[in-house]
Picture (tube, rainbow, N blue to C red):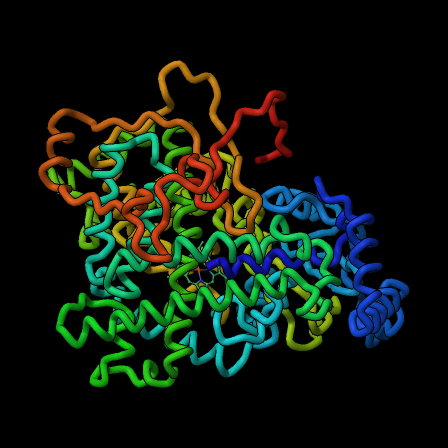
Length: 590
Ligand code: HEM
């Protein structure tokens, strides 16, 4: 995720017993696929080889003898749990039995689970050169070796050049408040909320896509391309996605009988066309002088300073910009959705934010220059990322060579997961970790308090963004986008649980690897008649993105009503929360 980067977290299911997943009659599916595939000679040879390798690894052929004094990690054996946040809870609970680091070997692949920030830093930061590869993804076969998706790329010279380019364009944009685009989109978003408050979840997603579309290509309409591409990719890299993510041996089927390979090829083609079109459009607008500042101009501009920009060819630049942009929707969408949940559960916090906003900003919306003067607003963003992580399982780091840590053997090729959910709840660091308490960053009574409050809290080095050389380059953008949009929302709206509601969701997120609170009914009203008028006077252009059927002119236009006429759910990613008939029981500490 980002964390489509997180997508890689999917991989820990990859070698599991699929029967542990609901609605999947695995043995029958597997048997019939195997039998029909056997009628194809190449497939028969391929599948037989794969099964032989799997059998060998299950029976333990090729086990390595450890050097003297080196011991194997505590080893868990068991089937994969449900995907999504449940997996973070399941693997998290096992640390009580095994300690801060343990292994789980399934079908020949070693997964390593890490419980603490300290161990994560020891491995992913201090030994980052050994721990910086990514793993293959069954439904997105080839994505690791490809040149298209930066967050999921193998460690390579190409990855290094892409990452340098990413740092270069971020460094240009960050001091310029991302060319002013978040501020423009904040106004449009609060106007849309005034007109259709019940569609708040859609407004948050659309906000993220328009903002990053503008930053990347100087036009919010390009965000539509990302809205179209992301859901399919997010599902493809999630265990809860296509069947092949559970029956991973199917990734060895040849393309002509693999529906997944065909659909991956189509998805890749569509993504490439989107990124080429957007980059070409910037070039055309540059010719006529009709272009706003954005990342793409940095690459096209012959005179732009920063040699790194020129190290990428056209295909590479299109994908470095595109694939770094699409992660900004689901990841930032996570804390934006959690904001509405927190305001309903903790109604005492909003007036405190509003007091600070009124005092510092008066009648205008919070802006980048207010950051040092608004610790409560910064604490809100910091705590939101901790309370409901966008990527609860982080993004796996794969080892490039064998290693020994505290006397334990860690093999080359192990898929290492820092459990971000758990790390964000380390009891000594975060008392009452299950609660949303922004004061923990502002009150010296809490261990997380740090001075000066003009600087702390901030998101630099926050564990939400991962570790080491694979760490997220999107921290500054996330920080500015959340600070200013949370600020804009609190400046003009009262946001609370609807009158008469006796139930709210607590930890309900969709099952994909970048998680997001499911939308639920929220009462959103202007704080006063004066505020309502202020929105009408100052936020006139709502910039609606979704189109009705007769407005559609491009293949990227996103329909206001999805195919079956139902409201926007972002292709099933933002499906509304439904109250369960039997109250849900959460594990301890959730
Ligand atoms: C709430 C917001 C975000 C969160 C929680 C987040 C989290 C993460 C995490 C956990 C990783 C993996 C780090 C690791 O492997 O240790 C990552 C990688 C990445 N993120 Fe973010 N991210 C966010 C926003 C963004 C934004 C706004 C962008 C760009 C516009 C971005 C671009 C990337 C890229 C390109 C990578 C891949 C880095 C690599 O593989 O070397 N992220 N992010």
